[in-house]
Length: 425
Ligand code: SF4
Image 1 (cartoon, rainbow, N blue to C red):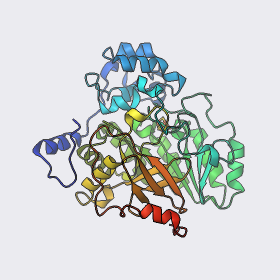
Image 2 (image 1 turned 45 degrees about the vertical axis):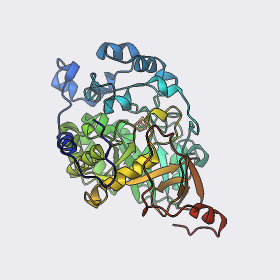
Image 3 (image 1 turned 30 degrees about the vertical axis):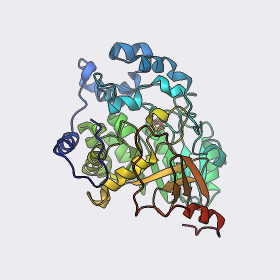
């Protein structure tokens, strides 16, 4: 399934066939829940109540678990809980150990291994937090962590230290302090609601939160980061969309990684959001044996556009503790981006970024921001001109050569570090 295509090579007939197959929209179906009445199946609260959270239930539903997965499921709650909606579970291929959906949501024992450079807070969010649950990293915007719950837990979650229903709150307990900070900080014109997943709040609660934000005059833009349309499309009800459209300008970023996640059900949910006038973007994480392949990536990007979603970011997987089995070399990400550029519309191309370890923020992987790249590290310059180091993922396959025209010559980083402060971008 995961063929590697070197940059610049021609697409083979097999790759073309794979691409066409991946681009099809399929229904997730009912699978093991075929006897559930339609009314229940299409209810988002029913889906939440029937999530797979227990290792015994997982084994019963999927007897072909590997020993690594079985052990991972037993230990999952010690770090990041396991939860999978029935809808999303139907996308898992029980016959394929390396199913790209399976790799994202079924725990593995490898999660207990902390590799070199990995951290519990890889993006340094806690050190930029003026109030618990609020991250003020960039000058004009804040990240507002409104809840600690998600419909399904991604095994590479950057916020695994915070999410997985550890406390079970709906609103963050410091909600009033969070809103107060935004109200008395006029520089904040853009608020990104995230978590956990804000769309897990019931309509009335979300409406209350959005109303309170809209009452702050300097808040111009509200954004919601959510994986709900992908994990739980049933949540995107006409009532939710009607409520959200009252709070424009409101943008929404979904999180999808693989073309199979974009089902008939997800496409319909995204259409409801688009029809409510909400601009949609997508954030993906580059993951080993999930989407680290140009054909898979291109099919995913094309399907996103067909769902009226603009690909926004492609993240290099953060150095989150226990994620090394899912991380891909930066060289591979560059190769994929080079393979796509020019071969599809610019609208389909996300920006490939590293969230600089320790709180440097998102740094695009471009010649302006990557100062140097060696076999074991990458030097990045962020938007403030500060320098950060990202350790390259250990090579499990021959590394692709750096594209000659994409990066400055060797030694450039050293010069930049020695010379005058780089220009702020
Ligand atoms: S939906 Fe987002 S916050 Fe929730 S587990 Fe996945 S990556 Fe983490």
